[in-house]
Image 1 (cartoon, rainbow, N blue to C red):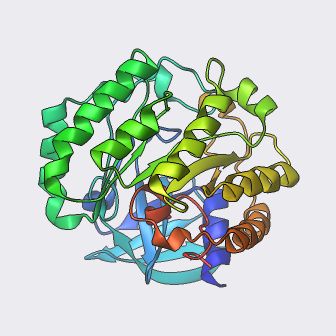
Image 2: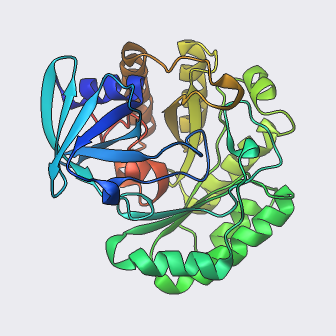
Length: 322
C-alpha cells in the first residue's frame, strides 16, 4: 500500500487506539475546531510524511508504541513501521495556538461554542512560544470569535505584535473583517488562511449561520494582492453534503485567484456528530482533481511555511503526500 492510499484510509477512519509503551509526550489536544474537547490525538509519521489521528479505544486501527517514539501501525491486516512525532504546540515543528477557545457563532460542524473555552492572555501566548521556540520553524495563530469579529481581530493583532520579536514566520487564520488582510500584512505576517468552509454558498448559509461567505472571498482576493500567489490558503470541508463537482468548482475558483485550497475531511462534531467521515476512495479521487488544478495554476503547497499546508496531518496535500 502506497503512502497516499494508507493516509486516505487513515483519514477515513480518523482515529486509532494506542497501546504499548507510555506515549504521553506525543499526545496533543485541541482547543478549537471539531477536535476540541476530545481525548487527544497523535501524529504518526513515515519518513517526511505524517497523519494526525484522534485517540479512540474503539478504533479498528492500532498504533503500538515501542518506545522512544518508534511505533508500528496495524490496519486491515497490514503492519507499517514508523514513528510518533511530538507536537510542539498542537502540531510538529509549529507553535500552533488557539487564541480564543470560544465562539459566538454556531457553525454546525464545530463543537467549540458548546465548550467552556477561554481566551489566552498575550503574555501567556508569548510564554507558550518561548517554551518551544527551539523546536519550531513557524508560529500559527487561529481563534474563535469571543465577542465580535472586530474585537477578535484587534486582539489577534496584539498577539502577533507581541510575537514578532521571535523572528519566526507567522501565519494567521481567523474570521476576517474588511481590513484584516492589510493589517496582518503590515505587521509582517507571511501567510494567511481564511476558510470558505463549505463548497457552495447554499451549504455555507446552512452550516455557518450569521457569517458571510462573500466577506471571506473578498478577504482572499485582497490577501493574494498583499501576500502573493501561493501564500494564501482556504480550508474547504469534505462531507457536508456537497458533490465532487461542487468541490472541483470551488477549487478552480480559489486556485484561479492564486489561493491554495485545502480539502479538510469532515470530523463529525457539533450538530453533525452523526455524519460519516468521507471515504478513502472519495479522498483519493478528489486529491487527483486537486493536484491537477494546483499544477495548472502553478501553485505548490510544498512551499508552505506555516499552518495546515506546512503540517499536512489532517489532509491529503498534493505535492507533499503524492
